[in-house]
Length: 377
Image 1 (tube, rainbow, N blue to C red):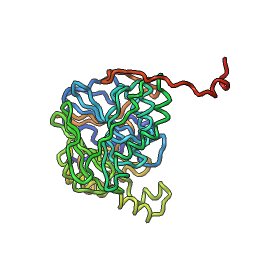
Image 2 (tube, rainbow, N blue to C red):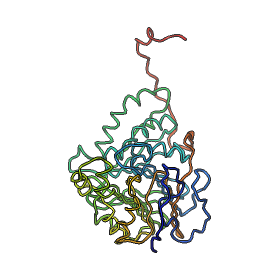
Image 3 (cartoon, rainbow, N blue to C red):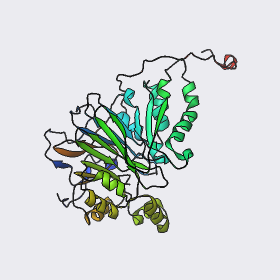
């Protein structure tokens, strides 16, 4: 399938309501879908995967693009969903999707850079206060240095959240503040999750230090692959070959990155060459893997997006979407469809069942100095 010529839709932050692609549908969908995705208006079918981009941006935090995060839902009876990274601003986009707070218990981290973990404290503390009573499980890579692995991160995050947790004793259950870390291999592929018909495998990525990984989500014969941040890497290609949807990080070309970030070109070259994949390389990866739909993630959509497609099309002419916040992919046997979501920016919490029976810890006695300081109003 060739990517047809033509102008790209306007980006969402400028009022656009269409996905940034020239090929929004691959295949022939058996189900009619509205032009935009409206949370709560479409149930997930058995055998379907839905991927919502909660954060599409890079380390520069801004309102137009939250930092990196994906939400992957599957159509099993449990209606499981999974976070993949949780960068700053992504939880606000999650809230707008109107999914149950109680089910926010499964997080897979590609690596521990701040722009991929910035909303973890909110997930642990704020969503526990909003109703989640089950502990959160977090998966992520180990390291040659134990102090840099996922287990150490979870331990120290728990210590950092100690005041938050202690402050609600006797008022809210504290079980939802608990974290269980699952440290996974960073140097070889391995299956790390197998429940309710969903299998998730990790594979090595090359980014910064040992410990960066990508993930494959397999459900009902479908395969979605998420690269995390990485330089071009054979493990990603091996995992992604023949995928239904490949979500791969793609930075702007060094010249564009230098201009937008206000960096010397040599610095931009070093950052992109040592840690990321750029459009010219991305086209070659897509040509090697041939997914039904390729999705570019972690890409600043403000400058030069048309040029990104030009660079990719030099090597690859298949379907490609530049992800924005709240780009939504529906993946089924018959089709892969890309849309933008239309959401309520002030959505209230949505609730569902829990696995843990709520219980309150004993309420501690108030500090003695409060007696004299409190105003009786």
